[in-house]
Length: 120
Figure 1 (cartoon, rainbow, N blue to C red):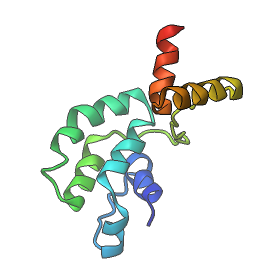
Figure 2: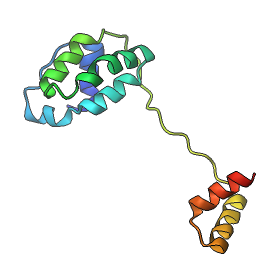
Figure 3: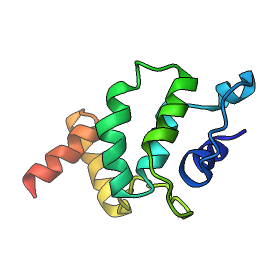
Figure 4: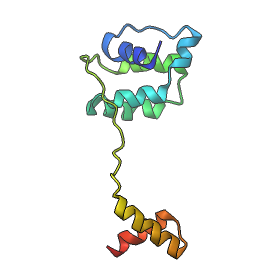
């Protein structure tokens, strides 16, 4: 089973499949399960924050799986979009200037970038 199979049984089908197989226990990660469930909706994110994040260390994998199945309501199937960090597009001209400043002042590129931000 994959993490998505676990998510489907916790959120959508509510089969209460138990993690009896050792392979199933190795594919189940409580952290990743919480992360994916919290990306489904803000309501489920609040439930995860108020319940399972507090008690994550109290349960083993089997108990935590059963806890999530019991606490979370059954929801309609919706594709969960993974939230990625947005990266800033770097301007080549600005990057070259920052590298020149870093070389001339003998500082790191990160420090040169902060120096440019302070002066601008």
